[in-house]
Structures are given as C-alpha cells and as structure tokens.
Image 1 (cartoon, rainbow, N blue to C red):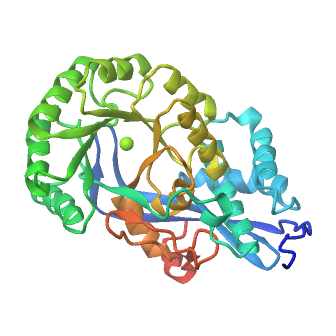
Image 2: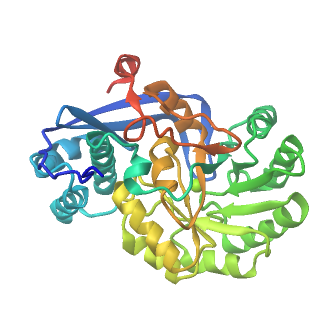
Image 3: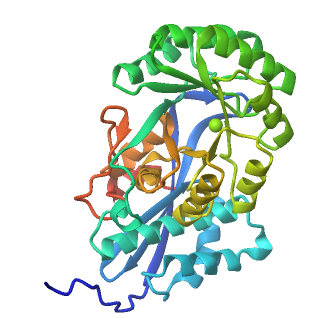
Length: 371
Ligand SMILES: [Mg+2]
C-alpha cells in the first residue's frame, strides 16, 4: 500500500488578474421589473504553482475595479489550499464598504477562481474536491422574456422541452393583463407533461399575486412561482406560500449576498425552495454555507443563473432541487468558455476528466467584448 497522503507544501497565490466583457443580448429583453440589452461578465484568473484558476460574476464594471483595488492585495501571497482563509480575509477587508451588492459579487468572482485554482493544483475536478452527492444536476430552461413575441416565447420554451429539459421558466409581470394569455401560450408550446415555472421578479402586489397563483395552478399547471411579490416583502411571500395553491412552490433568494439575508428569508417561512447565486453570495464558499442553512430547515436549494459556475457545487449539495439554465448566461458561457456543458437528459453532468470547473477561457474570442 503506497502512502497516498498529499504533503502540504504551502503554495502561494501569485497573482489575481481581472478583466470584464460586455456582450449584447441576442434580442431585446425584459422581465416584470427590469429591461436590458447587454450583460457584463467580470472574470478573475488566479494563478499559483503554474496553474490558473477561473472565476466570474455577472456584475457591473465597478466590480472589477473593486477587486483590483481592495481584494487582490489581501489574497496575493496566501496559501492556495486555504480558500476559506482567503474568503474571510476578503470579507473582513470590505467591512466598511457594505457586505451586500458589489462587494459580495467581487468576493464571489475571486472565491470561485480560488476554488478552481485549488482543484487544478490538486489535478481533480471541483466536484471531486468538494465531494460529490450526485453525478448530474437537473436543470430548468429559463428565459421567456416579457419582451418576446408569442412566437419567440413558444419557440424557446418548446425547444428546451424538445431537447429533453422537462421544466421551463418564463417571465411575467410587465403587462399583468396579458399574463394569463402568455402563460397559456407557453403551456400550449410545451405540452401537458413539462413543468411550467413563472417568475414575476417582484412585479405584483400581494392580492394580485395570490389571485394569479390560483389561476396559474388550477388552469395552466404552473408549479413554481418565483418572486410573486418583492423578495423584500417576506410577510407577503409567506402569505402567498401559506394561502396559495398546494401544488405550487414559492421561490426567492436571488438577491441574497450574505448568510443573514438567507436566514431571515427562511425564518420568515417565506419560500418553499430557496434560491441562491454563487456569483453574488460570496462565491462557492458562501453558496455551500447557504446549502447548510437550507438543509437545517429540511428545504431545498435551487441555483440562480451562471450554470457553469454552479454545476460542481450543486452536485455537492445534499438538499438541492435544480439549477437555472438561463438563456443569456448559457449563450455567454458557450461563447467565452471551452468546456461549458450541454444538457444530457435534462441535467448538466460535470466532466470529471477535466480539472477544476472544467472551463478554459477563450481569450481571443472574448477580446472584442472587452471593456
Ligand atoms: Mg428570478
């Protein structure tokens, strides 16, 4: 029997490089409360021991500046094996800037790059480093923007289902009078068996949301209502969870940046399924902590956006429901990263033959979008 223990050598993080890219959407996009035509991705590359780790967040350009001015100096020179120590140093250093928002997105990108780097130094897939619970993460197709025509909506959702993704989500709430008809169009396109989710991004009042929840569930088989009211209205979410239809899950959590936010949402019994985004909630380190909070409540976690960054951590969480396979980010991640996964039978399955998150940055392809 050989000694398989890995001696700890002490491997200093040498450099943290930051770049940002703005990519136009393929069509004009909107949801219940927001309109956009482009997406900025902030990419961090952390290097040590001849290896480069990749992390990213979807955030404003100012996030890149914050990483450069505040985070690189507290991480550089630390041991690449000690990701939680780097995480804590970053959290401490942004104390006076405020933990939610840009600070946590900046930490997220660096933290993900450090997890990727550590896995690459150990020459294992990130899922192996974190410890797998499952070999693949179920996904739901996510898009169905309120800016889409009926044809665009039906084609996008219908194509996902035809490709073997058995659950899809659409946006509602921009024109409340048209929502029942739009959701009906979606149901028509995906057939009776696929699961249909709706996301109002907080556009409705409580009573509006409750009335629509009943119609969506009873007449159109909707099983997931995300942010029916503002996710800051925890009592409102609780009310709809409590009084809404039994077969419909209430979900929120995408604007969570710190553990206290998720704890308060859970304490208020505001959601059936908690959402979290590792590109916002202080990285993979923060995301795994949210997973423990959810487990303590016997609930499940669903990841928000950025599928390539979530797939390994999601395969390492016990109380996990599914991942959001978000149209804009799927498109960007395939444009910028070799190794971005394609769905197999409605799941993303990490390739354990590739180190880290399995992504290689296509620098030359990204150059034209650099900001
Ligand atoms: Mg949402």
